[in-house]
Length: 146
Image 1: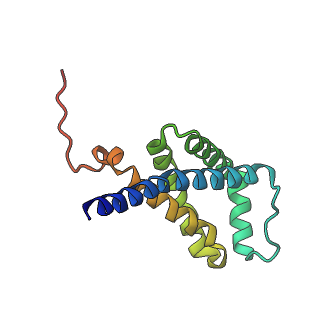
Image 2: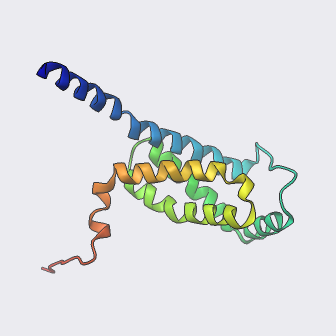
């Protein structure tokens, strides 16, 4: 009887170990696609976007802000894809994601779906890599200078 319990537990642990890499790769591919699309426009924007949305996006593009965002998305996507500096990549993408979510909530709630998908993956991965963020989330850090 004890063997079946251990086997069931092992199966769950075996299956669960695939979740963070799957989420990491999904987010990486989504960020690479979105970031590269921002530069090359291989998927044109919908025609029926609100006028304010088009004005703000145009202004952000003209100011160079969106090029920085798209470049960061490509960099973060590459880091996640090659599984290097994953906590750093998640930290770099977090403020951009807050901006994306806020922008969609205020300007175009009907197009928020992909942003919610990225938010879910980001939060799951932040939880999966929570040990890497522990020191950053301490209220006080005591450091002795030698």
